[in-house]
Image 1: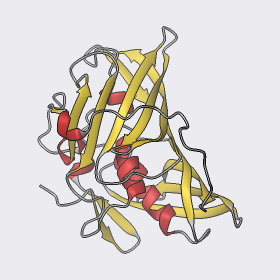
Image 2: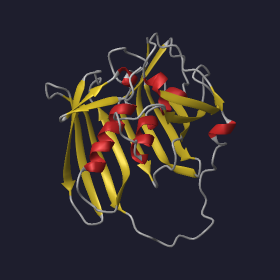
Image 3: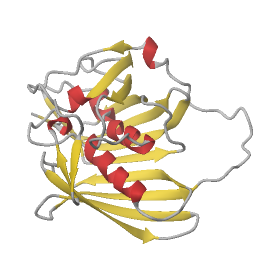
Amino acid sequence: MPDAFYIPGGDRFLATELTRGPWDPNSQHAGPPAALIGREVERHPGIEAGQVARASFEILRPVPIAPLRVEVETIRPGRSVELLGARLLDESGEELVRASFWRLRTTEVEIPAGLQRPPAPPPPGESEAKDFFPTGESVGYHTAMEYRFVEGSFLEAGPATVWMRMRQPLIAGEEPSPLTRVLVAADSGNGVSVTLDFRRYLFINVDLTVHLHRLPLGEWVCLDALTIPEASGIGVADTVLHDEQGSLGRATQSLLVGER
């Protein structure tokens, strides 16, 4: 069993089997690449006291389980608001994922008490550990993450609420940041709230957008997810994100739906 999702080497990151997605044994789940890009964005110079408020990923091609490189640039600099762009590249320089991040300054603001927020789900200790659906592989993203369901399961059709946490770090020898913890999980909304039978239908997300009003505290991130497919072959996965203190933000995914 690898001890991390990625092993760093120079300006490259070698993907391990823990990044493997459930649909193709040679391709990664989109969660680890999103988290890897987010890690590099956090390290990019800019606003000194800033937080990523929105991360948007366009998944241009399947991401292979291979060495990868991340490039980050400042598109719109500023003292309070900045827009960053990022690209995930393979060894040949082919662009696999294109991303953009709004990073906003943080400061103390007096907010009135009692504002309405989404209710917090029951904590992970009161939730049920359930198996991932069969993937045909003994190691992959499905074994690298721990799952505890409040409602639903991988084998039940319909909305689901599930706590997730990383069993292994994103980068070997490095503690995951709160941003990477939420990004590695957020792409799973479509998978945990399976509305259609995956043995008959495909529902592939072409993007992932995560809005965060705060970063998670602790190791667990909760996905309260709903997938809505249409007869047109287009769908959306809509996920409210929580930690044990309450809501963090929201993740959405555009879906290509079809019959196998």
